[in-house]
Image 1: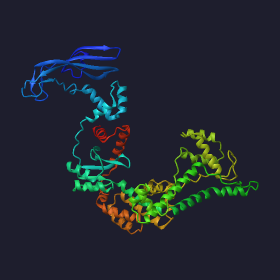
Image 2: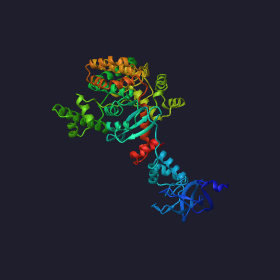
Image 3: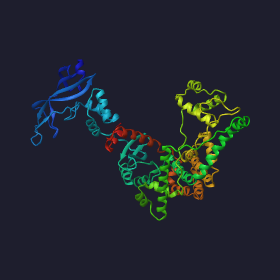
Length: 561
């Protein structure tokens, strides 16, 4: 066989007559004919060899390097010999080359389909153009919609969770086969009836992992009543975290005072004695004169205006709730989300919006910088070169701002390198953590807490007895979940119900209602973690589609790939 014949889509059924090379269009055209002498009627299946006429069919094929390749096939039209057949004349089919009425060979269509599965519409079009296989994104998506999906094996352990088609508006359901670690279907909504219908069509599921939502629990009971339901352990920790956050929000003023005083005392004990001793030994130094507080910035004014408006909405919602309005009626009247309305009704005082400390590129080097500062080296450029050798990748301005903070903490003038005799620099006091940061510090494994988090947790326990009880319940529940101790669950539920904390009483009630699934979570190894991973992959596919992400396309791209 010669080399040109090796370029044919199927050398066994095609014979190469001629090759034309066009330097102007940079294209290669191969003229071929079919080698078979008979055909089968596509309607009745009768074999015939009576040729009626001939025509030329042009197909795009895979490129050769950067040269476009076209295949011109001389196809025959046959007469059907069956008198009762409605098809009198038909064109011969070459299924190993291309589908009927297709304008590209099967191998080119398969390559385009693979590009579409990986890259989507417009990115796939750009990639195909780069590979010298041009195709419009609409045609590419049409190819995807005709992709046959594989039939997955019947799952035994099923993972169920929701995903957002449009966040806060439209949701669907993703189903994962845990044992094979692969998605098996996408459902158009997250209703119980939809899941129940799918389970009836696919019997054999014995274990179902899900979140704490009641819709999936109801659908699993209706569609697979004999299956064991397993609540997700991360959602259990999130539930206890939400209950703890409610207690913190109710006691936020005491918590804020406790954390602020504790941080101030720690900084004062470390910094002020040295500065005071130095001032006492130097009578010539006088305290700075403060002429007055600077006017608030535009940003501070905007923040104050937003906080005032939020406080007014909070007061309005509570007033309507005290008048007997329902949550839905308040949400319709105020334009707020019903979850926001529910939160406002539970809080007598609205917590102040605080932002936790942000990480800095300088954090790993601050201990070294303070030691060098106390040793007498206060030249920012010299210290910048030293920490760059240790791996610092930030800018000089970050270091200069940090030195300005140290000077202010010691009462030095700007750009001054002198220091009071005997004064020692310490790390400036960090902002108090947010309530959510405190919640996750408490739920986190005690061995993984930082020293600062351990200090914060110890301090907030002294804020109020209700906070002490809530922290103890949250820590015990986290240990119960992590160490898989189902025998401790009953005792914890009784403590939560008798704690007098409304949030934990409600949590214990919800766990009682779903106790079988919670105990299964503390006993079986399955969880919804792999499902969340596939949801992240689905989100990437949805965002990659540039608005061309209807359910059918997402389903094909997720399952066929």
